[in-house]
Length: 112
Image (cartoon, rainbow, N blue to C red):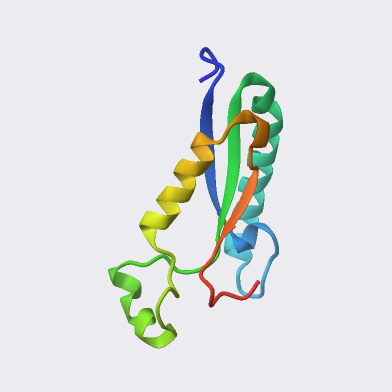
């Protein structure tokens, strides 16, 4: 990426990267650190043509493990993997004049 002065690095975080919560110390510490790493790399790499973003995933991702939550919560209550992928591709394709550093993805049922 450095040789070509272009590329994209996407980090996946969680709400725990923004604020700690009771019972989540084991998750908050590394997610805070990941966000700080992404911030540092974004500042270092942007002038070198590399787009660095941090994506906060706030909610359960639809999978066989979480299918029962759809019945409990209703439609569109879980993050669809294809929609997450589409968002990551949009970040990758952004023009340098409008790079996004941080983006939150959550279904409508999640509080923020």
